[in-house]
Amino acid sequence: MIRYRPARAEDADALAACARAAFTETFGTLYSAGDLATFLDEAFGPAGLPAQIGRPGWHIQVALDGDRIAGFAKLGPVAFPGEWSANAIELHQLYVRQPWLGAGIGPALMDWALAHATAHGASEMLLSVFVDNHRAKRFYARYGFQDIGRYDFAVGNTIDEDRIMRLPL
Image (cartoon, rainbow, N blue to C red; front, side, top):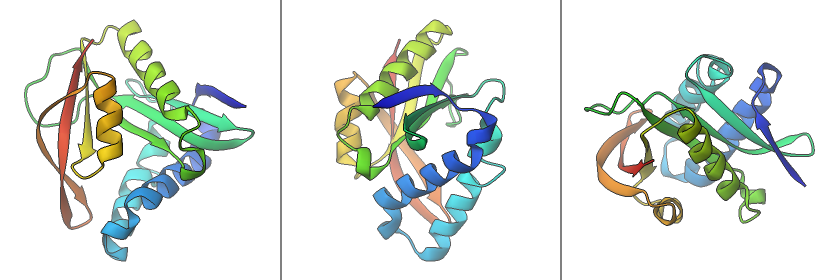
């Protein structure tokens, strides 16, 4: 049975390991070993995801299968360049490890993200998704997210095309 709760400081290492594994499972074959390692260290190393646990403005919900983190969602300030409403929020990551894909974790985490954002007064949610991640784009579209433009996403020295998606709340 999957349980959900906010991330805690003691989850830092396991959360970072989950994020590294989920990203690598999904995108690892697209990048050189060096670019992948650089990205994983920047995004999920000690100064990245683990440092955001409990930081004001950041909210991370984990999905637990027993004592293993099977997935997570992370909300925070909008990091995209451009003009956004003052109370916009960004879904920075919604990751589910491959062994748990199809188990309902993604929808449960998205439901949490939308409820959390609405309860905290957000007027819109933004996210970015890799242009060729068709499964994720369909998932977000089912929730009403609309593609509003391009975003260059760096993985090491590789620049990927991501699509920014927006949902008014």
